[in-house]
Image 1 (spheres, rainbow, N blue to C red):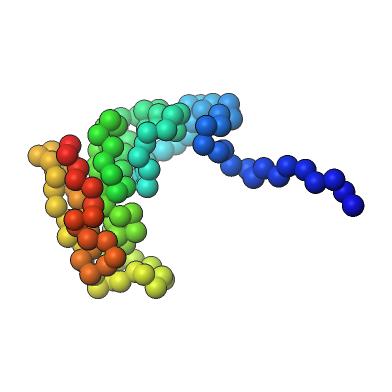
Image 2 (spheres, rainbow, N blue to C red):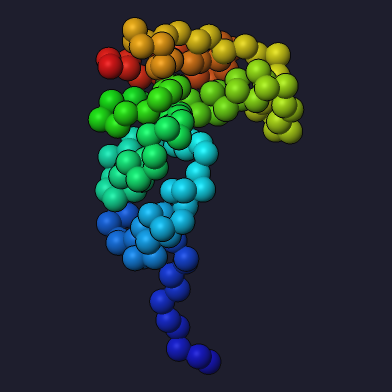
Length: 140
């Protein structure tokens, strides 16, 4: 019988360094090919990944979708709420159908601006498992 070894998936664990090729590719190739940045479901507090938006030119739109605001990073648009609700609402508004039991095409989200810039919104879908009160108070 062969001796057991350590199996490591091809992912980067928390506190592990990203491979050098990650930022090399980002700065040498990807940053010039990007026409939209969408960040979904993260607090953007863990380095070095939280620095990725800074590598992308400012003229490229940066969209942030998450339950909690990330006021320490300057996104062009922030959509604060449960990611499933927000993506579902975006799909509904685009006329797309999502084949998933939890997607309710007839449920419209409540969208509230939470700052004066008009670029930061709080979104919740009434009648789902997530209510507007559960969405973090943006306090931005």
